[in-house]
Length: 197
Image (cartoon, rainbow, N blue to C red; front, side):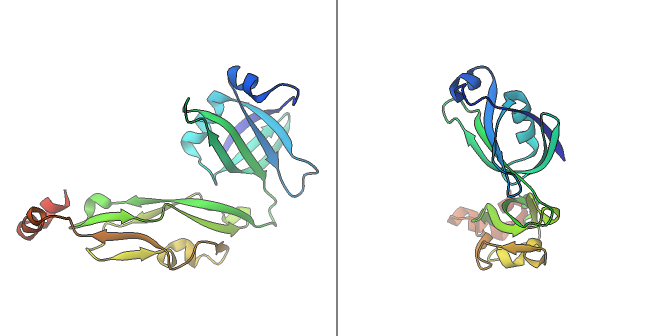
């Protein structure tokens, strides 16, 4: 689990000023906390964390000597500057289910004999205890054929008794469609491998 150091933020200093000084602002909240803690973190440290973890990722958050097992709840990017302005964390309680999401990554798409994968769903929403949290789902689509469809109910996470899915089980995750165009069809008849490339 990645560790991120944070400091308690002085609310008399405006967020804009802190961002100009190279900080990202944020909040830590949780059911067992009396009140949320406003935070400031070094921009470089946050960017390094977000290379490995996204929304829904777990992190060990160290705030002035105290450590929290936390979930990344929200990440607000500055669209003009392309960096993170704000990041919010939820402190986890081992006995409490939390809402989270897991990104779906397609793997082995290059092994498809024919057709093109169309990814319809990029993340699933769920509730789970901290020990059962999933950050990303790797979906092997190498053996799929044209016309094949994978739904949420077909994913491993749907079979995990410790996870309560919020996303509809019938939602299509990925479907394999034919390569469009007459030339592509003729080519597919000659050699399926070439059509897949």
